[in-house]
Length: 397
Image (tube, rainbow, N blue to C red; front, side):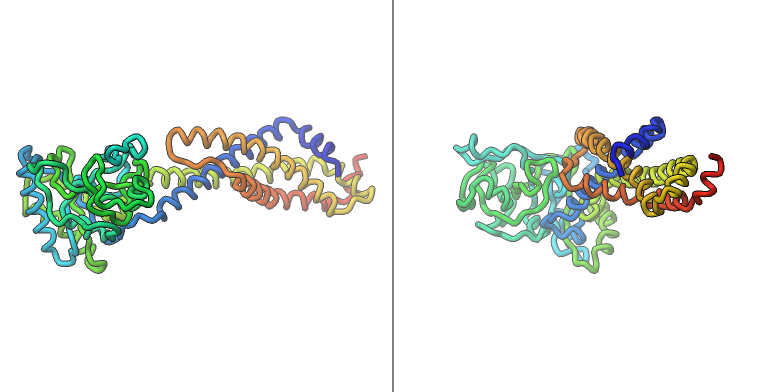
């Protein structure tokens, strides 16, 4: 079977072949990027967070009265709210924080070792101002030093001690013990196990925590609480009422688990991955229908040619292989065009969302899937064409 003859037959149908090549290329480009996005989203949703996502609840709220949004009235309100929340059956620990864990972005700044700024500066690290039970809520492990045991008043001179996560300590100090060293944010009191902070930070596990009341909460604040697994839902149902009873002049934006917070953080990628997957499936279906229709139409047109080949001794298997080879060649050419189109689409998507670059093996896998689908779609009309009787096909000669 000549490759030249296959190309000649294929490109004798210029319009049909061009449209089919474009359809195959678009299908492969969508399929490649939807698989990439689905893989990345799955990895992101399954990455370790260092948190008990199911049993830590987050309440995001804000006082509606201006005086309650600034220190010291704010500190008194926070303490009253924590006392009420901790009294709910099933609550293991509760703490306030100027912001939640697992965020896209928030309150952050740079961190560096004093007198070593140029070498150690990390530009975007979340800054948490929390109550003492914050570490109990997260169930953090103390790896170095000791946790501060009391909240530092904002009226006290100097910065409160800082607690940093393990990944940040390794970045700043390498193999040297971090506890007792001085950062631009204060003395390092302890190093704790990693937890997911901000997605837009230098690293999702880089965090610095200080036990101190926030000075003001014009944008709101968070109350985090860890519950026993059996009572998470029961605690959740009571939170709004309990907090409103403590202080009616508050607005509760939402109450959700950190598992829900994590899902929401990646909902854009998840939604786009689902959309591209549906479009890819539809395009694949349309491509199979188009391949079937094209093969069926041209097999009918070539009945006489096929009959003559059969009369000259060509076997059914050889005729079937020839017809399938034409479709395989068309699919291979469409796939090559599709890889170029997929690269362009990948770069376009990267301008809007986070998506990995194409790797070397995924185009091969998706091309194999496309070949299989086209083969399934064109096998029946090709098989029907091989059943043409030589006598019937040569009657008109």
